[in-house]
Length: 614
Image (cartoon, rainbow, N blue to C red; front, side):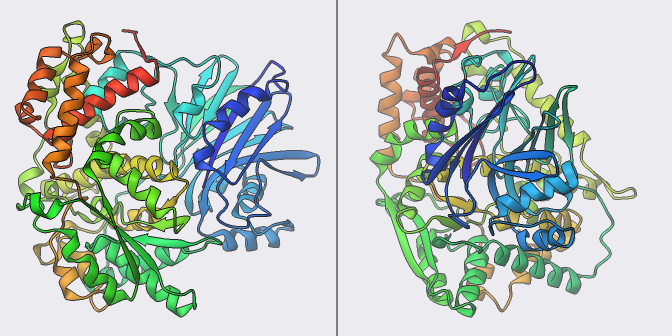
């Protein structure tokens, strides 16, 4: 994986301003510690930081190729999982290659098909191609939004980068947040509306979109979207089809010239990925698969057992690790360091995030990176196969995001100055827009339509939030994490499987469980879903409480420009219990609500955020 940046000006000569693009790429060094490059044209500057995974010698960027009299240059962050199929097609059309990197294949694909190359490739990506002859920039982001791509347009100028921090290195971009940005942070956060960069002049290319910037103007287009179709396969065929797609997606993502591992929690999703990967390693004589899990000091003594979190991962990880024949490492995090890393998590994300759910992943990835450069992870299975409690009947009639039913309580936090911003209306509109855009089949029952809406809502919101988190926290440690369940072919197929099949045997992810009978042991197949492991140790709660109380004692804190000090004090004194509702599903309860407020304070200080109402 990599970090990319670029600056285009349609009218002025910017070739002498390479120092700006260097500043932008320098702050992305964590995304690409192995190499860097800058390319200057009269109207375009391209910058790149490289994490070498495939073809370390031949994949250097920015990469330029010439076709006839036309010159094309690319900066690219990602991996293609059908590189050799595309290379074969292009060889048949007469193209030659100087490397075996997917970068050259992608650039050549654009030279042949233009923006239509997106119809041929399968992978996770964010890239920009500069056509020097046409003075045209083409940007694109993968279908599910695994890889990030932010941009700013002002007049004849477009600036783009993998992360917000890089854009803020450009002299024309300032850290200003207006009312809409506050609505994102306090109403939607830690999620973001698709396309939102929170800062006033910063946007993000939404998943499955491309952007063309040329002498005529700018065009943002959606190149892939889910379609509702009648599912005509019987249960047996659906099970076989699901298994086949997942095997193919996982095995395609094992291509690497550097050490590769898997995350293994002992749950269904990570066990599927680890089992398939381990089989492939043995078949291809790649040695023993390294797997990694996360836990916290003394967590077992404080764990809160309930219906939504029925058991500890630590009970299951050794069992499945032995079953697949892996070499497992359990990384145990201290609660004090977990709290302290809230600061680093904000800098990694450029925004307030999922509190210790972020900082724990940051610490985890840092340790994994000592032994591997690439990891496979189980994100997205819950969103596409129905793993969450809100997929069940009693939740389908919700009229808001089922993981964020705290809007009324969030509104109470607002400072007097911002008490009247339309928080509830903003969130409601985002929810309604998504529901209204849900692809549906004619003739479906009301319940089937509601089920489709819930899956679409999860794919467009909850899944993207988790993918954003995974990218920022892992890439901050120069660790590339691949997510096989986010293969667009799996998402397309699963979207049209009827709910009665997905919930086979009246179980969450019942179809997925059935598809891997004989591959995983029954104990894992039948294990009830448990959420991402978080700490329940009071040491952590006390640490964030103390931090928040210190902020309350600081008269210079920017936090109280936007939230009410007395309300925050009550939250701190009660360790978050006064908030009453979870901030963001069961992952963000009392301690995480305190930590989220801490992260807003960190963000406003470190990014020198200026608040404006317009």
